Amino acid sequence: MYLILFVLNDPDKVEQVLNAWEQAGVSGVTILPSTGLGRIRQKEGLRDDLPLLPSLEDFYHHEADINHTLFTLVESEALAQKVLEATQAVVGDLDQPGNGILAILPTVKVYGLIKRNGAAS
Image 1: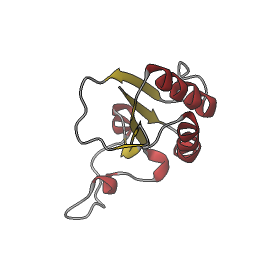
Image 2 (image 1 turned 45 degrees about the vertical axis):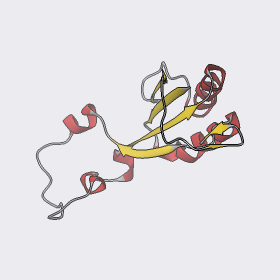
Image 3 (image 1 turned 30 degrees about the vertical axis):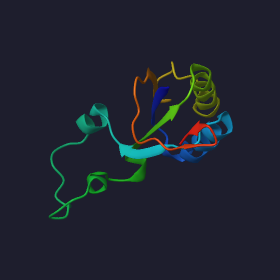
């Protein structure tokens, strides 16, 4: 089993990436809003418009200021390769700056995963 982590820089491509992953054979994806050190360093000072008890999303200025981190588990290295290819078909060559960062990690054990029709979900 493999864990795929993808930091997508362009929020306008989330739906396209999700569709491409589903077509490649992915049965479930978790998506989190995220930001990186570069974007944090570009901001000056502290924000003064945050609520008293802010949520994570309150720290983001605008949808365009955030990345989306997608992660999923896949059964095989072959499926992980399909996901990589599907991702690059949407966002472009991941070796080029600004297209995102994708990591594929071998996973030794997974607990709590419900399997449907022989596929991980």
